[in-house]
Image: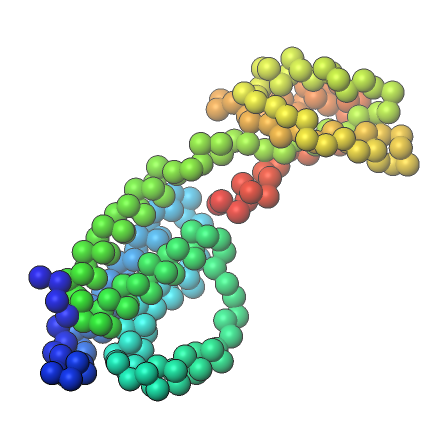
Length: 230
């Protein structure tokens, strides 16, 4: 059922006709278009890269063509590897999610280039469906409201317990991560890792902190790990 559409001779060399090559290329293009659609429409916030979505359409077909050109010829494979090693990418995927999408597209192109058309279609449906569902339910982002809170206070203010009641009201978890002095030691900067409650009013939270720290600087932002996950 999952046999290759390419015919194999007795000496194990693969024979590729124009018809089968056309089928492999068209299939990889269609599946690349499906992968690109999955990548775009699985993002609720529509923050995807248009150029990256465009590349996903062509990537499986390009890989399929390379695989068909190389075939079982070892010398040709090494020469192709040397040629592709000269290619320098101008940019890299934004995060691990994009890297996994690239490998997904390349594997589909590899299967199509080897002639396993049915296998490529099945893999696209299964992996693509799982990818789409995981992105839509935002799998792994259960701590999405985890942020970094930096509060500047005067040096004569005792920070221990100074904001505990506010943290209890507006956050579900709080951790004092770092304390450092600023402005020649006249100020303290407290860095907290906080998990904001789902329906908490962040502006009101900041306003109440301002009333206690003398209206000094307050910063509430996502941490570096959070930004990478987006």
